[in-house]
Structure formats: C-alpha cells, structure tokens
View 1 (tube, helix red, strand yellow):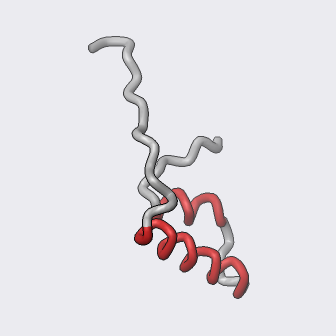
View 2 (view 1 turned 60 degrees about the vertical axis):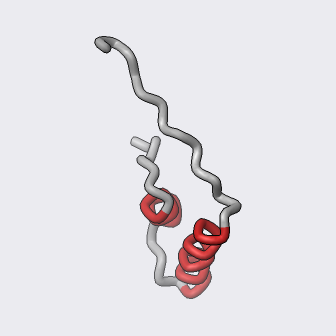
Length: 52
C-alpha cells in the first residue's frame, strides 16, 4: 500500500524476440544512427531508465 515501491520484473534478454530487438538497436549504433544507446535499449525492452 503506502510507502511500498513496486519492483520491475526482470525481462528475459535472451529470448529470440529480445535478441532481435537488441540487434536492431546494435545495428543503429554501429551505423551511427543511434544517439543514446541506453535510452533506445530501455525503450525496446520496456524498461525505465535509471539515469537522471
């Protein structure tokens, strides 16, 4: 209830779908299209960035 923080469930980054999504971001990184790799990886895997 009050004062409790919900913990984010860890995602399986080894599943075929996760690997495919990560590979797409990696391709953008190596081609120079990606400006913020952490933000893009967090976005494709549905995570909230801990930066800030």
